[in-house]
Amino acid sequence: MPTIALINQKGGVGKTTSTINLGAGLSMLGKSVLLVDLDPQAHLTYGLGIQAHELDYTVYEVLRGEVTASEAIVKRDGLEVLPSSLSLSAAEMELSAMAGREYLLKEALAGLPPRDFVLLDCPPSLGLLTLNALTAAQEVFIPLQT
Ligand SMILES: Nc1ncnc2c1ncn2[C@@H]1O[C@H](COP(=O)(O)OP(=O)(O)O)[C@@H](O)[C@H]1O
Ligand SMILES: [Mg+2]
Image (cartoon, rainbow, N blue to C red; front, side, top):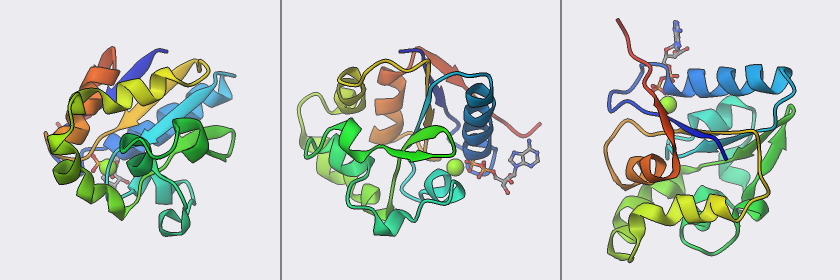
């Protein structure tokens, strides 16, 4: 699946805003789009009106291998979202001892039926979550403040 990571180690440069609006634009063009929220602050998830703290499953449980990506995906306004929540903040430490820890997202997405585009909204850091986005993506989109 064509997978694009929106990455910048700096916060507040427009990663989440760009992910949501690129997703909405592609969806309006008739493309099937999956947005993945990889930021424990869950701004993409909340920004789409999904109450992250009320979800049973998020990308955190998917990365831990407890549920499949399909089980955690939420549909919203014609988009599909693999949501995040604050629990994802534990992932950096918990997953750091796992073998193949850089490929957990790539493997989880590989099990999905194909979409036209997958957009990955990254946290403002160069940790394990961003590393997982880099191994899952073929392209990187770097929003920045000029
Ligand atoms: N193209 C833009 N022009 C002006 N403001 C923007 C633009 N993109 C995002 N913003 C604003 O910048 C702030 C940070 O954006 P956000 O997408 O949350 O950044 P990040 O995900 O990189 O932390 C938000 O208040 C957002 O509304
Ligand atoms: Mg963000």
